[in-house]
Image 1 (tube, one colour):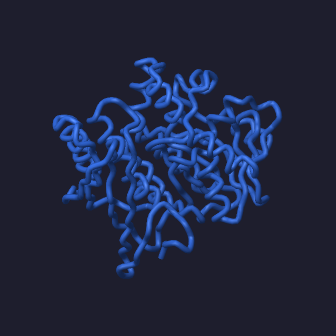
Image 2: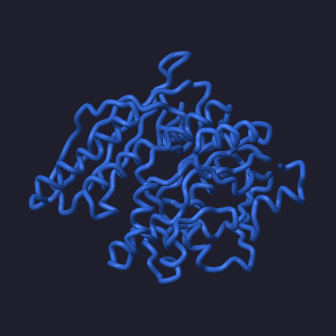
Image 3: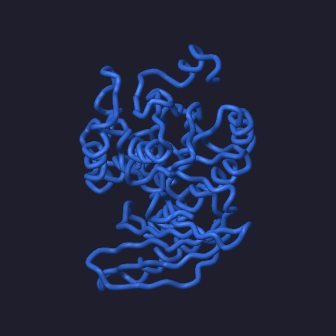
Length: 318
C-alpha cells in the first residue's frame, strides 16, 4: 500500500481487509550524554513513524553499533532504555543485531499494525485543514549546544523530556477523530516535513510563526550559532520554495528548519473535526499547538502573527 512510489514515514503491506503491516527503521549517534536517555530517545524516535502512520507497535528489533572500548555498563544502559520505551509502547522487543563501529549508534526496526482503511499518510492533507503540532521545536540546537558544552542543564532536561515522550496518544486521538493526513517532525525540521506533506497532498500551507512552540533555550542557542549541520542543510534544500514575511527574523527562520530528534506529530485536522480533536486533547492533557492551515495554492508561506489572528479575520476558518 505504501512503498517507494509515494515516500512516507513507513512501508505498509495489506494483510487482509482489516489489517495492514506497518514497518519502519531508524538509528543514529547519541544526542545526549546519558546512555539510558539515549536508548529511550532512539527507541521513541523509531516508534514515532508507526504512530505517524496510524499504527500500533507490536514488535521491535534492536540495531546496535558500538566501539570496542565502550564500557559494558553504557551498552547495557542504552539497551535498557530502548527496551523500557518499547515496553511502554505495548510492544515486544524480540532481539536484533549488533556490530562494531567507531562510534555508538542505536535504534530499532519497528513493526506495527493498522487498519488499512484508516491510515495516516503524508498525502492525506486537504485545503482548509488546520495544522497541529504536538511537541515544541528546538532539540537540534539544544543538542548542538550540549555537544559544545554550552547548554544549560534545565534546557537539556526539558529537551530530553520531550524527546523521550512517545507519540502514542497523538496517533490515537488522530485516528479516533477520523484524521487522514499526518507525519512526524524529525530530521528535516518542521518546514522540511511540511514541504513533504503538501507536495504529497498537492496543496500548500500557511504557517503562523507566533503560534509555533519552541523549547525554552532554543532561541538563545540559535542566536548564538549553536546550529547543527542538518538544520543548515534543511534550510538550503527546502528554503528555496518557502516564502517568508520579510519581518520574520533569522532566529525564527533557523528554528523552523531545525533538525529534530524524536519530534512531535504534524497533523492535518479537517475543520469539522477540529472541535472534537481539540476537546479530546485538552481532556487527556495532551500537548497540541494549532499553528497553520493547508491551502489550495501550492506554496508554503510563513506569516508573522498567530493562527488566532487568522481565525479572527477569517471566521469560517475557526
